Image (tube, rainbow over all chains, first blue to last red; front, side, top):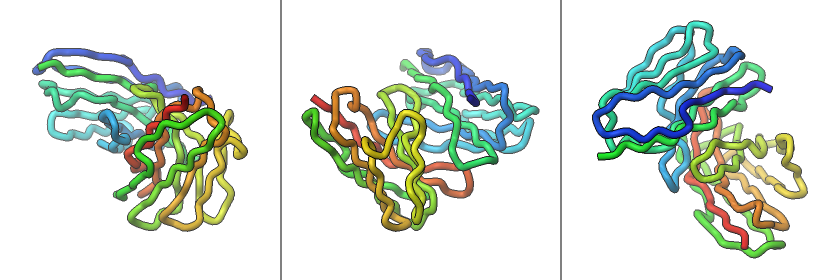
Length: 111
Length: 113
């Protein structure tokens, strides 16, 4: 079974602090995606990383794909209350179009 | 991207009854997926529903309990049959676009009493 371990599962920090969420696997993925979900809504795609070592930035969010395409991280700089939500990583394999999902990180940013 | 709507948004049902959830997409898509999610937790794939073929169910999910229809490229339904309180969950449909990226509906929150 191909697993994607996501950590931490829960994080509560003050506004203005920085944080990093990690997704790790022993398997190689063709791409990795990050989603954010707010209560009462479905997950929303934030970014897809495809190339080993790739770094993508979305305002205060920085996403990195590991060189070996087995791991990824999401770094948020100067977190804002609007960043509160459930963050999910998902890895894609070449063999089919299903995604392997991490356990999720519930993030709370306190004003 | 794609815009996905789901009906109903929430429902409270009695055990032993069935509920059909509808998923409508604003564009034609080949791949649709049905997930189950406990609040605040990750997603569990129930089945993949591609138009023109039978749905493919994941381990632990069977067609008799979760029958799926996919009559065309913009619509699908998931029925939760003979419900029990253990079926209380959020049910999400998604579509596959541009390869592996998925776009989700807002979900259906089901409570079984």
